[in-house]
Length: 74
Image (cartoon, rainbow, N blue to C red; front, side, top):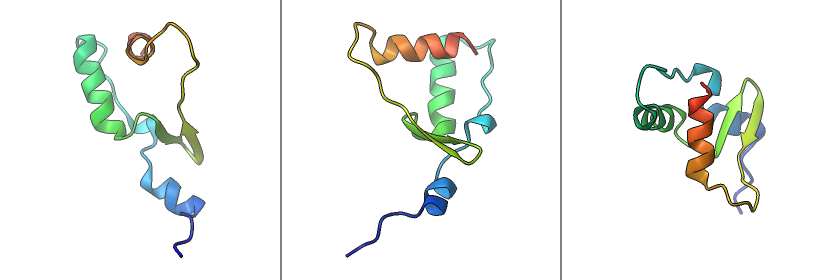
């Protein structure tokens, strides 16, 4: 039986969002593409030694709405 991934292994495998650089001069679509390319998994990343798992509430706002709002604020 395989053991669960250790916290250290998980942290080592994740991109630290602090290293992600977004050019605010780019159109939103390009910022989205750049963010996803850099972060690898927008639902699971880290901030320093803290693992961040992203999920959304059951609302009218779509993931695209939330994602555009996030990038527009950067």
